[in-house]
Image 1 (tube, rainbow, N blue to C red):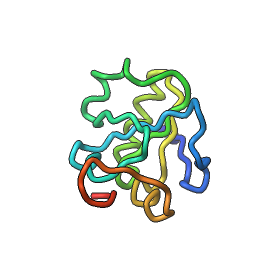
Image 2: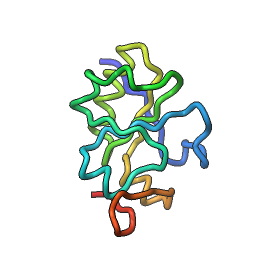
Image 3: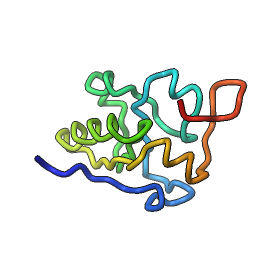
Image 4: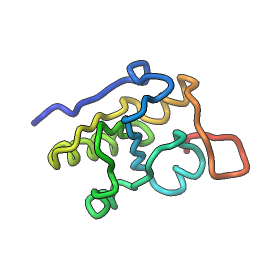
Length: 111
């Protein structure tokens, strides 16, 4: 089995550089409560059908803790896309105090 390319939050530049797309593969309710600003939202189960929406360049793939995003990275790499998994997902992102936005009236949070 191939190893999934992975990076920790500390290894992600702040701010996120141009050319690095953040791909959030969580479910809509998770996305609505808090996500990385500018991220592309494609839930994991929709990814094969929406692959053409993933822009060229490297993709930083995120979910809540890193499991779904690891599956997505495995798939994307098989499709020839340069993708890396965020170790610890949005839990680690929020825990590191990195910025998030929300689609709700409350403060951004990871659900």
